Amino acid sequence: MAKLVIEIPEAGQAALRFPPGEVEQELRKELALALYQRRGLSFGKARMLAQMTRWEFDSILKFF
Image (cartoon, rainbow, N blue to C red; front, side, top):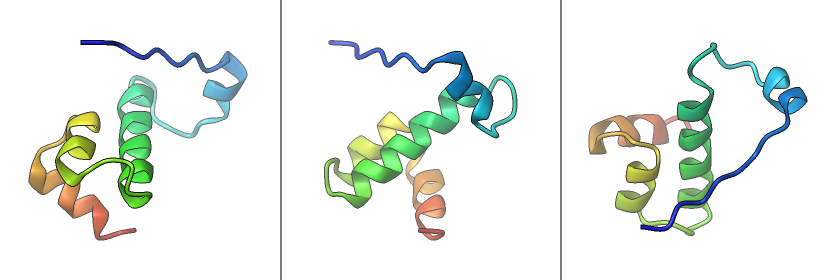
């Protein structure tokens, strides 16, 4: 499986208001939501990117 690595400068990471240790998971979730909303990913692929169960991902979609 190919792996994509995105580098975020420290200044950008510091500006994020995510709890320490949760930055990667929160960014995965945000990217998955954005791609799903733009129809770039199906529901199943988006939830896998977010590393969430079907029910967890469905529950956060209610806020968008």
